[in-house]
Amino acid sequence: GENVEQHPSTLSVQEGDSAVIKCTYSDSASNYFPWYKQELGKRPQLIIDIRSNVGEKKDQRIAVTLNKTAKHFSLHITETQPEDSAVYFCAASSHFQKLVFGTGTRLLVSP
Amino acid sequence: GAGVSQTPSNKVTEKGKYVELRCDPISGHTALYWYRQSLGQGPEFLIYFQGTGAADDSGLPNDRFFAVRPEGSVSTLKIQRTERGDSAMYLCASSLGPGDEQFFGPGTRLTVL
Image (cartoon, rainbow over all chains, first blue to last red; front, top):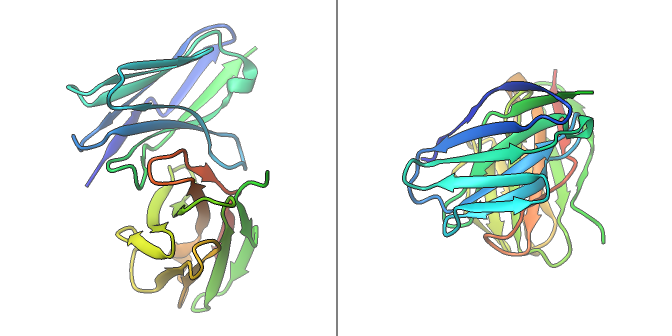
């Protein structure tokens, strides 16, 4: 079955810096890659997603890149703000069904 | 409109007891998913419904776990003979259809004493 690995497990940056979180997946059939943000005690919320027919997608300060050959995808957050502090999960899905999640990255943005 | 809701928000039970967790998806969403999230981990897939039928139940850990969605809307996750290892946050998500964005509910935190 699908296996998703996520790095780093924790990431501390200064406000205004960029943050990059990387994930690798094992199933070459995976074709949908969402990123979720989860604040403490809250539900996961989708922040951006990418499908396998696209290499890069951007939404304001957030971007995701996908390398299908290497089976890895990354989340890029620019101009980080304290409110970006949360746990971020990558996920992969084949046949547009169940999501297989990574283990999460705790991002801390210090003012 | 209303998002995905789950009840109860917290459930404390004793080892060996039976529990039911309820999920109300967003109206009109045909796909419904159950996930389990342990502390410090990512959500782990349990079961996926398309309409009334379980399209994929490969994530259910054993036969103590069962889920239903009889009318294609509300779903109930049922756990028999609960064990301490079942303690976790149980998350429900729904999407308009397969492949669409999955919206998560607030979860039910299950504690088995």
